[in-house]
Length: 204
Image 1 (cartoon, rainbow, N blue to C red):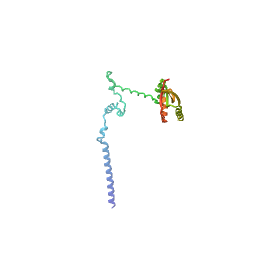
Image 2 (image 1 turned 30 degrees about the vertical axis):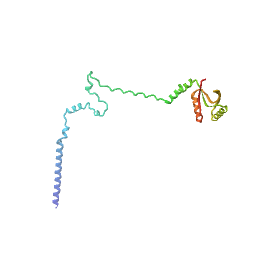
Image 3 (image 1 turned 180 degrees about the vertical axis):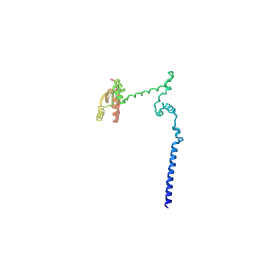
Image 4 (image 1 turned 90 degrees about the vertical axis):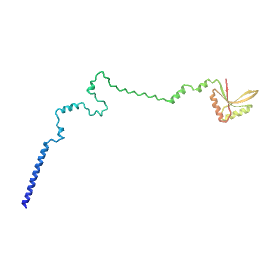
């Protein structure tokens, strides 16, 4: 039994040593043999480095990302003097000045204060005197009653006597007014009270 156990242990040790030797031989073989597709690109000729450096001397990796034009190549820098230059960009036009702000209200006030309106010119050239007549009566008592009624309404009227067709006539009038606009304004007030009126124009 012991002899059988000793033979098995010896055979296991011998097999282990043989396996280690085979693995070592394979490792040495792999490290010395060049690997295809890997060592082929590693081995470069002596002149390839100089050619690659000359090719990449003017290469700009950011040329596609830059918005500025690239630097001129030697061929462009040595172009003949007679060639037409590139067109220069047109200068940007200056913005037109904004119109000055206006003040319509201020202009209207200035026009009203500096130049007389059409009413003022008519008033200055009107040669007549105006009265607002609120009735003509044959008797003085009737005329005085009308004047009193106007005074109660706030109007200052006067009674004047004039002979017409050989008979005396008593007229109740407001005025005189130096312009027609004032007389018409007073006439509208009397009409608002339900009174019949007449505009009388007299040349002085």
